Every structure is written in C-alpha cells, then in structure tokens.
Amino acid sequence: ANYGFNKSHSVAYSKIAYILAYLKVNFPAYFFAQLLSSSIGDDGNKRISYIRDANEFGINILPPSINRSFAYYTVEDHAIRMGLMAIKGIGYETVKAIVDERKKGPFKDLFDFTLRVKIKRNALETLILAGSFDETYSNRASLLASITPALERAELFGDYGDGNLFKDSLDMKPNYVTIEDFPLMKKLNDEKELLLTYISHHPLKEKRLTLSLEHFQSIAQ
Image (tube, rainbow, N blue to C red; front, side):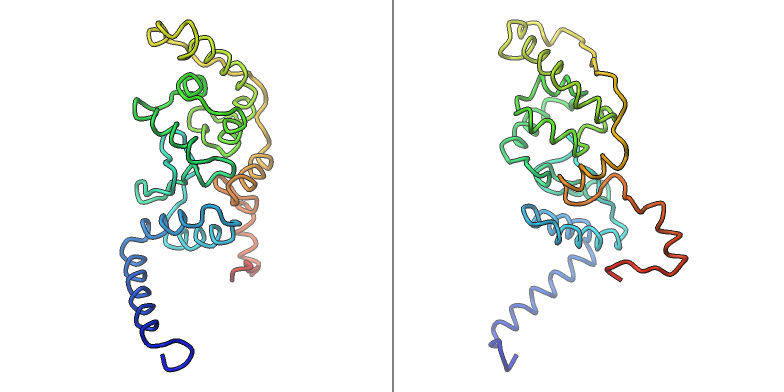
C-alpha cells in the first residue's frame, strides 16, 4: 500500500477481491458462469483455466444446445450450460433468432429447426459440429449430410414457400441421410476447434487413472 500503488487503489482492489471470493465460495456455479461468459472472444486459455477450476468445485460444463443454451453461459441444475456465442463463428443475431423462435416451443429435430429458423448454412454446419444438435440426433455426420434435404423441405413448407398455410397441420417426420457417424477423435477435434476446449469427452479420459497411478502429473500440477 505504501509503494507502487496508492492506498485508494489498495482499498478498492481488496474490497473487490473480498466480494469475488465470497461469490466464488457461496455461489460458485454463477461465479464461474460469469467468468466463462467474460472469456468469450479470447484465445481460449482463460476458458480452459476457468473450466478446470469449475470442475475442481464439482461443477460440470454442459455442451451447447439448441434447446437449452442462450447467448452466454448459464447455470442449469448446479451445472453450467455453454452459451451459443461461445461457439467460434456464431454471432449474436444468429443466437437471437434461435432463442426468439424457441420461445414458441423446443426444436424437435434438424428439420423442425430449419423450418422455423432462417440462418446461414455455414452457421448451421458449425452448430452441428459443435454438438448443439446432439440431443435431437447423435449422429453428427448424418446431421451434416441432412442439411440439404432439411433446407429443401424448409423452402417448400416454410414461411416463404407456398405451403406455409398448411405447414402447421402437417406432422412431418425427420428424414435423415443414413451414413456412419464420425470417429470420436474427429468429433473431439471439431469441438476443440469450435469451442476451444473438449466438452463431450477427452482424448486422455481412459488413460488418466493409469497415468495417475504411475505418478504422472498434469501440466497444471
């Protein structure tokens, strides 16, 4: 306090540090959700550090979801749900269109989504590769291959098609292109690229116990 900083700075920083420590201890999920939201747009180093700290508090980070995610990180049943804007290449206007339409009801599948939400094809591809549609259909390769038929159906029965007058009365089922799903490492590489971290799994998950028993240490340790 007597050297380098004047005393007013010391008092202010001390008060802020105390408040943040109180929030971290008593409301850790909300504390880390805000921290992670503040990391959106950075190079990923802070995000990885925050996620590791949250995990040490027993807080799980849930993957992005077209039906549960908002723009930023949110608390969901003592866990933290990743925000859609945390996905590389997904902007606020895209998220707003998704959230606004979702107020009318959850999205049932990719075909229902494209019928109700008009976003660019590359944004749709990014959402799929980031795992946002996994809860509706787990085969990401099939989801990706089904974009064209989904968009064609949306053009035929969507708001700007002649069929918009009767689309609500139709009970259309999804018609996914059936192909083999991507290998696990391909999915993880996509997540790392788009989310800057692994969410659904980790390449070393099965090896960690063995490595720990052999007294290997993580870089953080």
